[in-house]
Every structure is written in C-alpha cells, then in structure tokens.
Picture (cartoon, rainbow, N blue to C red):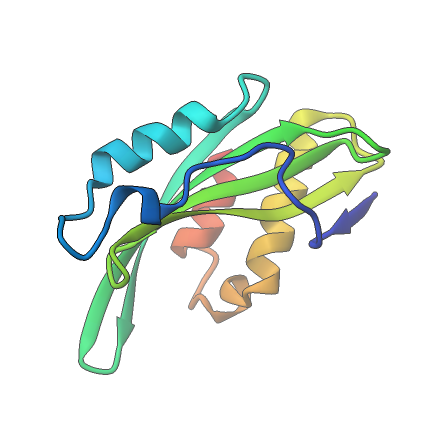
Length: 140
C-alpha cells in the first residue's frame, strides 16, 4: 500500500465567496447544500467528526464531513472532507490523501483516516485511546 497526500479532487465545488459578500450574511445552509450536490454519486460518506478546540482565550468548534471516492490513474481511493470552522465561519473542501494497492473500501478508509490523523499528531496527543480521534477510527 502507498499513501500520498498530494492530489487534487477530480471534481469542482463552489467556493465560500459565492455565498458571502461584504453586504450580506454568509448562507451556511445553502453553501453546505451546494457542496454536497457537487460531490459525485460514486463518493461514499464516511462520517462526521466534530471537535472542540481550546485556544488562548477562545474555544471554537470544527465539523469535518469525510468522504471516500474511487480514483483512477493507478490510485484506488481518495479521502476528502468538507470542513466547517466556526472561528472562520466558512465551509471549505479539502483533498486529504489517496491510496493505491488497496482495493478494499473499508481497509482504504481506515488506512487513509489513520494516516491523516497521524499527520496531524492528534492520535499521539490524545491522553488515551479513549480519545475522540481514536473513537472515530474504531467506529468505522
């Protein structure tokens, strides 16, 4: 198995600037709906991970909606996410990583999520294996 973190999603999605300007409120629900509609039908929703981050004098919530999509060109699957950060108040879409040499969807999903979380050092930083990121991996 080989995992790569450098790839582009094989589809277009609407940017947050299409749902916000200086004169109007950001339409979160309409933007999320547009993002979800842009995802090809072959992609599978993996799960929603909600996290509370505590910073100096501020706490914010992030929501990550993970998806797995079959790829071509020698790569089996790609993991991507729609992410909401209430500190910035915007949705974004991000290609996370891709895998080749693993045609089993469930194994690819697990390997890609684990690789992503390890790259963020969140698995090591949790106090125990009962932490939220470990639990998210076990729930797959």
